[in-house]
Image 1 (cartoon, rainbow, N blue to C red):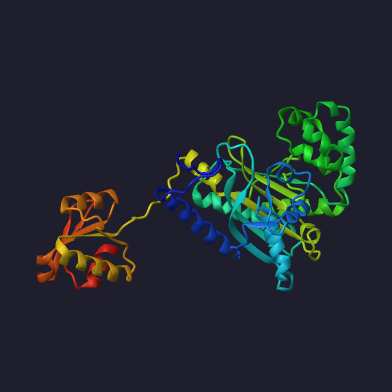
Image 2: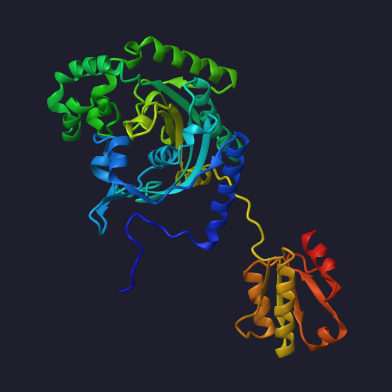
Amino acid sequence: MAIKAPKGTKDLLPQNSYKWQYLEEKLRKIASTYGCREIRTPMFESTELFKRGVGETTDVVQKEMYTFEDKAGRSITLKPEGTAPAARAFIENSMYNDVQPTKLYYFTPCFRYENVQKGRLRQHHQFGVEIFGSYDASADVEVISIIKRVYDELGIGGVSLRINNIGCPDCRPKYNEALKQYLSSRYDELCPICKTRFEKNPLRILDCKNKNCKEIVKEAPTILDYVCDDCANHFDMLEKYLNAVEIEFTVDTLIVRGLDYYTRTVFEFIDGNGSTLCGGGRYNNLIKEIGGPDVPAVGFGMGIERLLIALDEQNIEIPKENYIDLFIGSMGEKGRLFALGLANKLRYRGIKCECDHMNKKVKGQMKYANKIEAKYSVIIGENEIENNSAIFKKMDNGEQIDISLHDLDRICHIINK
């Protein structure tokens, strides 16, 4: 029996890789216009990073992490998200000593053992942005603006922004008590996981995906009635900044996000069907929680697979470049040697070339040139070499151009037109 890819993983095949390359290039350019620089962190981290940073009561830590012991007996986890590793790198490399804010972006694989469904794989890929060092709500709007710019440039419509304020460690305990008091009368109706959250972290119950729990929390107290003055002022400024950059939003008090490190601002971008496309928020205590100085931060994570699904659902095609600019066919040994040499010279000039490596006849070579969608083709044999001239054929309309085989400048000019 042939070995197959593990459940929840997917091969990225050549016929689709151009889509990922296009998106990655687009996202890099957008992030750079906001002053963000790339960071790359290891694929695995100490398990303690996620327990302390993400939170032991979250679904990620409780049910979804790929955790194992290495040969030295250390507990290691394949990273389930990108923020905590970026924060760890910020601390370990003393980036807090640099001029602030520190604005980072990354592309990373993430690993979560969860039910496999559309847009949700056990290995997925994330584009994220983190801004360290600023308490001001303008940084929150900065990361939100990057997401909005992505959807605008890709032409994804029907996307709406929902925001909430989940307070801070000073004011959240008051809300937790009010929430527990509300939930206590319906405690027996909660799912088993929410029953464990009831004492440790009742706010997590608002994020439960269980249908019954979602129905129970609909009438729960609103957290905005319990936040302290500082958190309320921050949220007020967030709304003012969003209006200043002309980004429409809706306040949704049930948004808490699924990770414990969030404070104050949390947000989600929702599609026309009510599904979450992307989310993030502020995490002012994460750096300190995992052993660093008291540095505020805000960021988001965007699933690449989910982004591709959104494009597909709205019939938005990603432009596909020519895979091959020129197919250089050949006849005889001299032709094959010359073809390979010409291809090598043209590749150094940026022309994407392909030759015959299967010893096919001319007819078979031309069929191959069609299948790989070459922009131009040429066949070189002894006559072409002796005459220093060959016919270059434009594949889409059959146009033929006689060009000197040593006039590399003209060959490149014709192909690049």
